[in-house]
Image 1: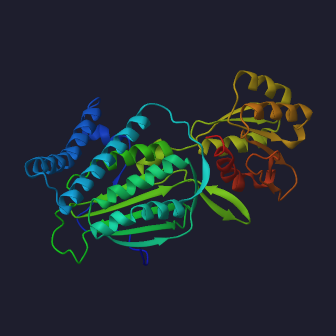
Image 2: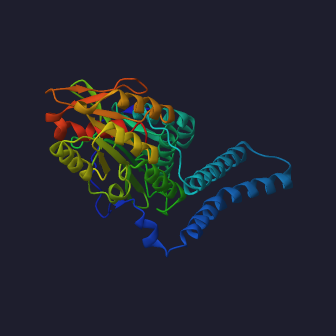
Image 3: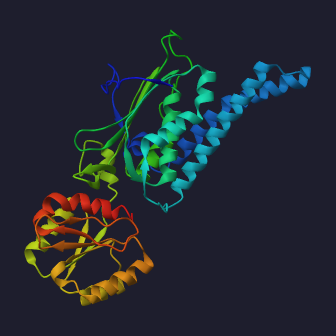
Length: 385
């Protein structure tokens, strides 16, 4: 593995950046036909390794001998078929219904490094030139989906040639982790890439789109016959802010993926307060984050509200906190230990973050709501998403 400097994200001349969204499938094929498209891709990608296997078996049947080259061809064909089988199974699970995700704080650079190390032997056998520039980036996502996303990304990029450049860095604003893979034919190989991906919408790309949609990340690509560039942006990236571990989330963005996959959109917030100004401020912030807000004027009514429907987060004015609120919190944590409670404090410059699975409560001062509340809510809701 060689280290190298980051490379330009500018798309090569003649290539256009394509952004993943649910509209991709709809634009490419009529409604109801996407399953047939996927089935056709699976069949096409299995045909070549199956032909190699058949050829080797027929030759062995005829001569009762098998060469080292044929053994390598057979092994490669088996690995290719196994990859197609794994990817199709993953797509079936993703399409089968809602996934139960366990969001954890993970080192993205470590996950990528491990995935590349696992392929080191295969890369060496293929003569792949690997260049890496991985900065330390942490994200809050489901571990299994993140591993599948990284694997699918490397698989997609690897089909474009034997020169692979992998980069992981932070966007300046918003501070999102950005994972970039650029693959092309190596200079040493020369000529036009005859082994590269000739079909952009292969199984790896469809799998990438499905995983990205489930995770709430955006995936963009630039592809030609002999070069592919893939860019994955992680909205829920952990950053350090004045000693506070927080999560940066993008409320908008250019990618079509953002508008349909906001990980917080639709989550319900219960506010316990009688202060109209405070309620109005919280509602404004939640509206910008596509969150749903309910309000009650007392902890007693909050208990009744939760008996009918448990929200994803409870915010309380500290002036209304009483033993009944503490009892409600204990009861709800028996159902969901990670259900977040946030207390609005009157004192200025108050900011106390509860650690995961702790008995403490996150507190933020009233005068810091506009600047602090969005990031705090993302961090707290990441525990229950």
